[in-house]
Length: 287
Image (cartoon, rainbow, N blue to C red; front, side):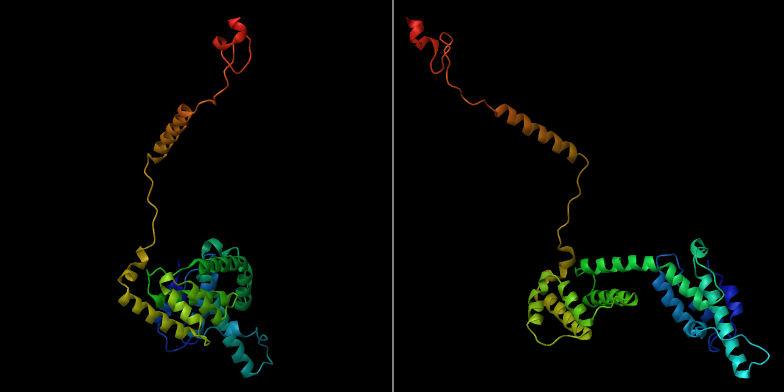
Protein backbone atom coordinates (compact mmCIF):
# COMPACT_ATOMS: atom_id res chain seq x y z
CA UNK A 1 0.00 0.00 0.00
CA UNK A 2 1.02 3.57 -0.63
CA UNK A 3 2.28 5.62 2.28
CA UNK A 4 0.92 8.95 1.03
CA UNK A 5 1.46 10.71 4.35
CA UNK A 6 5.19 9.97 4.38
CA UNK A 7 5.62 11.07 0.77
CA UNK A 8 3.59 14.25 1.18
CA UNK A 9 5.65 15.23 4.22
CA UNK A 10 8.77 15.13 2.07
CA UNK A 11 7.14 17.14 -0.71
CA UNK A 12 7.44 20.84 0.06
CA UNK A 13 7.34 24.00 -1.96
CA UNK A 14 10.98 23.59 -2.90
CA UNK A 15 10.45 20.10 -4.28
CA UNK A 16 7.56 20.78 -6.63
CA UNK A 17 5.30 23.39 -8.13
CA UNK A 18 4.25 25.82 -5.37
CA UNK A 19 0.72 25.98 -6.80
CA UNK A 20 0.06 22.34 -5.82
CA UNK A 21 -1.58 21.76 -2.45
CA UNK A 22 -0.97 18.59 -0.40
CA UNK A 23 -4.42 17.26 -1.35
CA UNK A 24 -3.66 17.73 -5.05
CA UNK A 25 -0.29 16.03 -4.64
CA UNK A 26 -1.96 13.13 -2.84
CA UNK A 27 -4.46 12.88 -5.69
CA UNK A 28 -1.66 12.65 -8.26
CA UNK A 29 0.12 9.94 -6.29
CA UNK A 30 -3.01 7.87 -5.77
CA UNK A 31 -3.63 7.98 -9.52
CA UNK A 32 -0.52 5.92 -10.22
CA UNK A 33 -1.34 2.27 -10.82
CA UNK A 34 1.03 0.17 -8.66
CA UNK A 35 3.56 -1.76 -10.72
CA UNK A 36 2.82 -5.49 -10.54
CA UNK A 37 5.04 -6.84 -13.31
CA UNK A 38 2.47 -6.85 -16.13
CA UNK A 39 1.63 -3.14 -16.40
CA UNK A 40 5.06 -1.56 -16.79
CA UNK A 41 4.19 0.62 -19.78
CA UNK A 42 1.10 2.03 -18.08
CA UNK A 43 3.04 2.56 -14.85
CA UNK A 44 5.92 4.30 -16.63
CA UNK A 45 3.54 6.65 -18.44
CA UNK A 46 1.72 7.57 -15.22
CA UNK A 47 5.00 8.10 -13.34
CA UNK A 48 6.25 10.41 -16.09
CA UNK A 49 3.07 12.49 -16.00
CA UNK A 50 3.05 12.83 -12.22
CA UNK A 51 6.74 13.75 -11.96
CA UNK A 52 6.38 16.25 -14.79
CA UNK A 53 3.33 17.97 -13.28
CA UNK A 54 5.05 18.11 -9.89
CA UNK A 55 8.21 19.51 -11.56
CA UNK A 56 10.24 16.56 -10.30
CA UNK A 57 11.31 14.99 -13.61
CA UNK A 58 14.53 17.03 -13.80
CA UNK A 59 16.66 14.05 -12.72
CA UNK A 60 15.14 11.88 -15.46
CA UNK A 61 15.89 14.39 -18.22
CA UNK A 62 19.54 15.20 -17.52
CA UNK A 63 22.63 13.26 -16.50
CA UNK A 64 23.99 13.42 -12.98
CA UNK A 65 25.88 16.72 -12.56
CA UNK A 66 29.32 16.95 -11.01
CA UNK A 67 29.40 16.87 -7.23
CA UNK A 68 29.69 20.16 -5.40
CA UNK A 69 33.18 21.19 -4.33
CA UNK A 70 34.62 24.21 -2.62
CA UNK A 71 35.41 25.60 -6.05
CA UNK A 72 31.87 25.17 -7.43
CA UNK A 73 30.12 28.31 -8.62
CA UNK A 74 26.72 29.48 -7.42
CA UNK A 75 25.12 28.26 -10.66
CA UNK A 76 26.72 24.82 -10.30
CA UNK A 77 25.55 24.56 -6.69
CA UNK A 78 22.00 25.54 -7.67
CA UNK A 79 21.96 23.05 -10.56
CA UNK A 80 23.17 20.21 -8.34
CA UNK A 81 20.67 21.01 -5.58
CA UNK A 82 17.83 21.02 -8.10
CA UNK A 83 18.94 17.67 -9.47
CA UNK A 84 19.40 16.20 -5.98
CA UNK A 85 15.86 17.13 -4.92
CA UNK A 86 14.39 15.79 -8.15
CA UNK A 87 16.42 12.58 -7.92
CA UNK A 88 15.49 11.97 -4.29
CA UNK A 89 11.77 12.54 -4.75
CA UNK A 90 11.64 10.60 -8.04
CA UNK A 91 13.21 7.55 -6.40
CA UNK A 92 10.84 7.81 -3.44
CA UNK A 93 7.74 8.02 -5.65
CA UNK A 94 8.86 5.25 -8.02
CA UNK A 95 9.81 2.79 -5.27
CA UNK A 96 6.63 3.51 -3.31
CA UNK A 97 4.52 2.64 -6.35
CA UNK A 98 6.14 -0.77 -6.91
CA UNK A 99 4.53 -3.88 -5.49
CA UNK A 100 6.48 -5.29 -2.56
CA UNK A 101 6.44 -8.73 -4.19
CA UNK A 102 8.66 -7.58 -7.09
CA UNK A 103 10.54 -4.64 -5.57
CA UNK A 104 13.42 -6.84 -4.44
CA UNK A 105 13.92 -8.24 -7.95
CA UNK A 106 14.85 -4.80 -9.33
CA UNK A 107 18.48 -3.77 -9.19
CA UNK A 108 18.70 -0.87 -6.75
CA UNK A 109 20.37 2.43 -7.57
CA UNK A 110 20.72 5.86 -6.00
CA UNK A 111 20.22 7.46 -9.42
CA UNK A 112 16.58 7.77 -10.56
CA UNK A 113 17.48 7.70 -14.26
CA UNK A 114 19.61 4.56 -13.83
CA UNK A 115 16.93 2.93 -11.66
CA UNK A 116 14.26 3.50 -14.31
CA UNK A 117 16.55 2.16 -17.05
CA UNK A 118 17.15 -0.97 -14.97
CA UNK A 119 13.40 -1.46 -14.66
CA UNK A 120 12.93 -1.11 -18.42
CA UNK A 121 15.50 -3.84 -18.96
CA UNK A 122 13.85 -6.01 -16.31
CA UNK A 123 10.39 -5.78 -17.87
CA UNK A 124 11.44 -5.86 -21.53
CA UNK A 125 10.23 -9.46 -21.89
CA UNK A 126 6.80 -8.73 -20.44
CA UNK A 127 6.48 -5.78 -22.83
CA UNK A 128 6.99 -8.10 -25.80
CA UNK A 129 4.34 -10.46 -24.45
CA UNK A 130 1.98 -7.52 -23.98
CA UNK A 131 2.65 -6.42 -27.56
CA UNK A 132 1.75 -9.90 -28.84
CA UNK A 133 -1.48 -9.78 -26.85
CA UNK A 134 -2.38 -6.37 -28.29
CA UNK A 135 -1.67 -7.51 -31.85
CA UNK A 136 -3.85 -10.61 -31.46
CA UNK A 137 -6.62 -8.50 -29.94
CA UNK A 138 -6.48 -6.10 -32.87
CA UNK A 139 -6.63 -8.97 -35.36
CA UNK A 140 -9.66 -10.56 -33.72
CA UNK A 141 -11.63 -7.46 -32.70
CA UNK A 142 -14.83 -6.97 -34.69
CA UNK A 143 -17.49 -4.32 -34.27
CA UNK A 144 -20.59 -6.05 -32.88
CA UNK A 145 -22.69 -3.04 -31.97
CA UNK A 146 -22.38 -3.59 -28.21
CA UNK A 147 -20.57 -0.26 -27.96
CA UNK A 148 -20.82 2.83 -30.12
CA UNK A 149 -18.91 3.15 -33.37
CA UNK A 150 -16.84 5.99 -31.97
CA UNK A 151 -15.83 3.91 -28.94
CA UNK A 152 -14.85 1.01 -31.19
CA UNK A 153 -12.56 3.16 -33.33
CA UNK A 154 -11.04 4.90 -30.32
CA UNK A 155 -10.30 1.52 -28.74
CA UNK A 156 -8.43 0.45 -31.89
CA UNK A 157 -6.51 3.73 -31.81
CA UNK A 158 -5.61 3.18 -28.17
CA UNK A 159 -4.11 -0.24 -28.94
CA UNK A 160 -2.13 1.32 -31.79
CA UNK A 161 -0.82 4.02 -29.46
CA UNK A 162 0.34 1.38 -26.98
CA UNK A 163 2.13 -0.54 -29.74
CA UNK A 164 3.83 2.67 -30.83
CA UNK A 165 5.21 3.04 -27.31
CA UNK A 166 6.83 -0.39 -27.79
CA UNK A 167 8.48 0.72 -31.05
CA UNK A 168 5.82 -1.01 -33.19
CA UNK A 169 4.32 1.99 -34.93
CA UNK A 170 1.34 1.53 -37.28
CA UNK A 171 0.66 4.17 -39.91
CA UNK A 172 -2.66 6.02 -39.90
CA UNK A 173 -3.47 4.86 -43.43
CA UNK A 174 -3.01 1.21 -42.50
CA UNK A 175 -5.08 1.63 -39.34
CA UNK A 176 -7.93 3.19 -41.33
CA UNK A 177 -8.04 0.16 -43.65
CA UNK A 178 -7.71 -2.18 -40.68
CA UNK A 179 -10.67 -0.59 -38.90
CA UNK A 180 -12.76 -0.82 -42.07
CA UNK A 181 -12.17 -4.58 -42.18
CA UNK A 182 -13.43 -4.89 -38.59
CA UNK A 183 -16.89 -3.62 -39.56
CA UNK A 184 -19.72 -6.19 -40.02
CA UNK A 185 -21.40 -7.16 -43.29
CA UNK A 186 -24.08 -4.48 -42.81
CA UNK A 187 -21.37 -1.96 -43.73
CA UNK A 188 -20.45 -3.74 -47.00
CA UNK A 189 -21.84 -1.01 -49.32
CA UNK A 190 -20.11 1.60 -47.16
CA UNK A 191 -16.76 -0.20 -47.47
CA UNK A 192 -17.18 -0.65 -51.22
CA UNK A 193 -17.85 3.06 -51.59
CA UNK A 194 -14.68 3.84 -49.63
CA UNK A 195 -12.54 1.46 -51.70
CA UNK A 196 -13.69 3.09 -54.94
CA UNK A 197 -12.61 6.54 -53.81
CA UNK A 198 -9.17 7.86 -54.67
CA UNK A 199 -8.93 10.01 -51.57
CA UNK A 200 -7.70 8.48 -48.34
CA UNK A 201 -9.51 9.32 -45.13
CA UNK A 202 -7.82 10.64 -42.04
CA UNK A 203 -8.77 9.16 -38.70
CA UNK A 204 -11.04 12.09 -37.86
CA UNK A 205 -12.83 11.65 -41.21
CA UNK A 206 -13.17 7.91 -40.65
CA UNK A 207 -14.81 8.44 -37.27
CA UNK A 208 -17.25 11.01 -38.66
CA UNK A 209 -18.18 8.87 -41.69
CA UNK A 210 -18.58 5.64 -39.72
CA UNK A 211 -20.73 7.28 -37.05
CA UNK A 212 -22.88 8.86 -39.78
CA UNK A 213 -23.26 5.50 -41.55
CA UNK A 214 -24.19 3.77 -38.31
CA UNK A 215 -26.91 6.33 -37.61
CA UNK A 216 -28.24 5.90 -41.16
CA UNK A 217 -28.42 2.13 -40.75
CA UNK A 218 -30.28 2.46 -37.47
CA UNK A 219 -32.94 4.57 -39.17
CA UNK A 220 -33.28 2.62 -42.43
CA UNK A 221 -32.77 -0.88 -41.01
CA UNK A 222 -34.50 -1.54 -37.68
CA UNK A 223 -32.76 -4.93 -37.44
CA UNK A 224 -29.39 -3.17 -37.22
CA UNK A 225 -30.15 -2.11 -33.66
CA UNK A 226 -30.04 -5.80 -32.72
CA UNK A 227 -26.61 -6.37 -34.23
CA UNK A 228 -25.04 -7.20 -30.88
CA UNK A 229 -27.58 -9.96 -30.19
CA UNK A 230 -27.90 -11.23 -33.75
CA UNK A 231 -24.90 -13.54 -33.61
CA UNK A 232 -25.91 -17.17 -33.05
CA UNK A 233 -25.11 -18.62 -29.66
CA UNK A 234 -24.46 -22.25 -28.89
CA UNK A 235 -27.00 -23.91 -26.63
CA UNK A 236 -25.74 -25.25 -23.37
CA UNK A 237 -25.64 -29.03 -23.32
CA UNK A 238 -27.74 -30.76 -20.70
CA UNK A 239 -26.24 -33.10 -18.19
CA UNK A 240 -27.76 -36.27 -19.73
CA UNK A 241 -26.94 -35.41 -23.35
CA UNK A 242 -23.81 -37.53 -23.24
CA UNK A 243 -25.72 -40.60 -22.03
CA UNK A 244 -28.48 -40.04 -24.58
CA UNK A 245 -26.00 -39.83 -27.43
CA UNK A 246 -24.37 -43.06 -26.22
CA UNK A 247 -27.71 -44.92 -26.13
CA UNK A 248 -28.62 -43.65 -29.60
CA UNK A 249 -25.27 -44.84 -30.91
CA UNK A 250 -25.77 -48.32 -29.45
CA UNK A 251 -29.26 -48.54 -30.96
CA UNK A 252 -27.88 -47.60 -34.36
CA UNK A 253 -25.21 -50.28 -34.13
CA UNK A 254 -27.70 -52.98 -33.05
CA UNK A 255 -30.08 -51.99 -35.81
CA UNK A 256 -27.32 -52.23 -38.33
CA UNK A 257 -26.35 -55.69 -37.04
CA UNK A 258 -29.95 -56.96 -37.22
CA UNK A 259 -30.49 -55.67 -40.73
CA UNK A 260 -27.20 -57.10 -41.90
CA UNK A 261 -27.54 -60.34 -43.97
CA UNK A 262 -24.91 -62.48 -45.54
CA UNK A 263 -24.71 -62.42 -49.32
CA UNK A 264 -26.62 -65.25 -51.09
CA UNK A 265 -24.55 -68.29 -52.12
CA UNK A 266 -25.17 -70.86 -54.86
CA UNK A 267 -26.87 -74.13 -53.65
CA UNK A 268 -24.64 -77.11 -52.90
CA UNK A 269 -25.55 -80.76 -53.31
CA UNK A 270 -24.88 -82.82 -50.19
CA UNK A 271 -24.68 -86.04 -52.25
CA UNK A 272 -22.15 -85.29 -54.93
CA UNK A 273 -20.73 -82.25 -53.16
CA UNK A 274 -21.02 -80.17 -56.32
CA UNK A 275 -22.23 -76.58 -56.31
CA UNK A 276 -25.14 -75.39 -58.42
CA UNK A 277 -27.96 -77.78 -57.51
CA UNK A 278 -29.63 -79.50 -54.60
CA UNK A 279 -29.58 -83.23 -53.79
CA UNK A 280 -33.14 -83.76 -55.05
CA UNK A 281 -32.10 -82.44 -58.43
CA UNK A 282 -28.83 -84.37 -58.52
CA UNK A 283 -28.70 -86.84 -61.43
CA UNK A 284 -26.28 -89.10 -59.60
CA UNK A 285 -28.62 -89.30 -56.62
CA UNK A 286 -31.57 -90.19 -58.84
CA UNK A 287 -29.60 -92.95 -60.54
